[in-house]
Image (cartoon, rainbow, N blue to C red; front, side, top):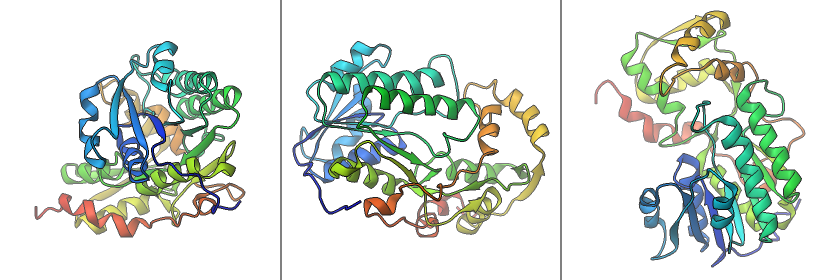
Length: 315
């Protein structure tokens, strides 16, 4: 696929769902850099204020959206030329369930996009949802199918674990290493990941909106390196200057722990996450990737030092 035939995003109205989150905020910044006018759908309009720094006055605006019914989604989309959906949750809870966030919302967005003749729709899903057995993956895959059913030209991005300043993965374990006597290696720490830099994901969104040929395609986004859970820990220790004992924990013991931890308001571990970990999170050999969008992936070793140093024992 050629990446040289592009459309201009300047002054195009783009509605972003989930624009205040870790990935969404970088997507907003990338769109603004291309001259787009961004509407961020949100329950709390004041939460969008920090995004205004990325553009000129009026270039980033909040659009009130409760996310509780299809009418609100339609109102947020009406008048938009392009749509990006970045919404996702890591664990199932009553007020933000997997079925609602990962399945219902993509369907509602896709139907509204068709109703209002939106030109492009980019939906961010997750890597390995087509082969993992977790409820998270099943709900994500169902959302993909629904989006395709109601907006066949949707472009789907499936990133692996996303890293960068403010991530909820590398930072989580780096902070745990400062206070815990050991870190767990679930199943021996052999689960594989292909971590991708958040700025590369944001650029992929922009490219998909720019490149007509990306419509109706699925891209799997992974970084330049495949690493095990144990190797991720080792990188954290290397770039933070920390040291911590690693303890191998069989899956069955991990599930007992997760059963109790999952009862917490913000659970650090759930049984569903353990199920996800049992499927390698790497790009398929036959998949379209970042390179098909003209993007060279950024290595973890280039970025991790910029934000892991703050976890050093000397600070």
